[in-house]
Amino acid sequence: MRTYLKTEILRVLRNRRYVILALAVPVGFYLLFGKLGDDGRAVRGSDVSTFFMVSMAGYSAMLAVLFMGGARLAAERAGGWTRLLRVTPLPSWGYLTVKALAAMTIALPSILLVGATAFVTGPVRLGAGAWAELVLLMWLGTLPFAALGVLIGYLFDADTAQPVTVVSALVLSLLGGMWIPTARMPDTMRQIAHVLPSYHLADLGWRAVAGQAPVLADGLVLLAYGAAFAALAAWRYRRDELRA
Amino acid sequence: MANDVAVRVDGVVKRYGEVTALDGASFQIRKGETVALLGPNGAGKSTTVGILLGLLRPDAGRAQLFGGSPHEATAAGRVGAMLQHGDLPEGATVAELVRLVHDLYPAPGPLEETLELAGLTSIAGRRVERLSGGQAQRVRYALAIAGAPELLFLDEPTVGMDVQARKAFWRGARQLAGRGATVLFATHYLEEADDHADRIVVLVDGRVVADGPATAIKANARTRRVSATVAAVHDALLRGLPGVRGLQRHGESVLLESADADATVRALFASGVEVRDLEVTGPDLEQAFLTLTNGTAEEL
Image (cartoon, rainbow over all chains, first blue to last red):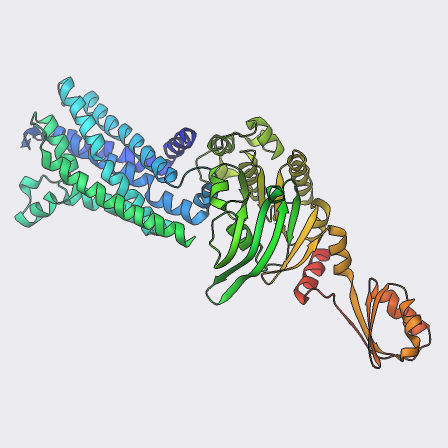
């Protein structure tokens, strides 16, 4: 299974769409809105650059793990690759485990790349402890999105799963306050943001860079979403197996 | 000897809605045998393979591998399969993919040997999305044998291969069978079944209509029935006609089983005996099997 995991990660790193969509684009957005757009105002206890660094790290990681499931998984299902694996000794939980582990592995470069860009080019200056806290918490926070990616892969066919993935990431990041801080949102919008997992993922990071202690609510909401997505994905997975 | 049996299919029925794909099929394969599952398209070959691999559930009957469930056998790494369709996951190289499957099995064969047997050594570093159809087919074959399985399923393995690739493919497959592996391959080429199988199981409309060594099946396939109205006094002469292997009489009409209907009919007319209502019909297998053998002659 280790070989499968390794191959799975290599496969996605070679995928041009992943590299552009999940790595290059968020870095570009950071440079545009974070670095160049920094007007000196304070956002959530940090400056604009730092705020956007966290947002784009979250957005990039979210896209990366959604990408791992999503259209790729749908295509592997339709194309018969999963059927071929079922004939091998790979246990039935093995496929989803590899997918989830691979997703978590590729979430890390997303966060690190945006962070490194901000560190090298920008005014973002944090202590080593804050950097470590930022990376670790945001990394763990992407777990529910890995489950969501798998769920999308089981709910839609390959053609539909692709746009669904991209639109999900966009909508989640927009409504989750990654682009426009929730403080500047109307009340209703803010209330919507506060129930979305994307807001709580970013909130882990925003608190880390602002020197605030992490709050339990962020962790609990993400955990609840993770459990719900995983349960739904497992249900679809089992249905898929029985039908085949 | 139950211990000798690698594959047991026992009265298996499989329906897809209104369509009955398998209608009480039964056969067995002993360990070490190479058996062809021969039948026209839609006969239920792939369904049989799917059930034996545990990918499909039979509606009735039982399918067993090594005396246990198909799932037990696949989980233990005793089974390898080359299915008819299966897109290879893009982004991986040929060697990476073969190694992936190789590492999933408890006692795989040497990696280099697998690549060589499948004729992939020269393209081992190529990405799977850049392979031709025939090359991809060889990769699917490599994935089936990478784990050095005791039991190998090949579902129409040579479809889309040219004559040369087909030859190379069977050379490799025979090498594996020579090491004691049990092989079941599905095909609609009688020639292929004849050349490479110890035994042929003929599947038509979801039922096993013939099961035996290739020679017996082929003789069966060539058998024609010649029916005519001929006076009973000529029976001895009829029995002596070339190709005739059996005679049944019902009053004035007679039914001859012939291994060479053309010669029989020619000799019958040459004999000067009065013959009426002459009719030649196909073998006692079903019409579909007749189509099958004709198709084979055209395609090869």
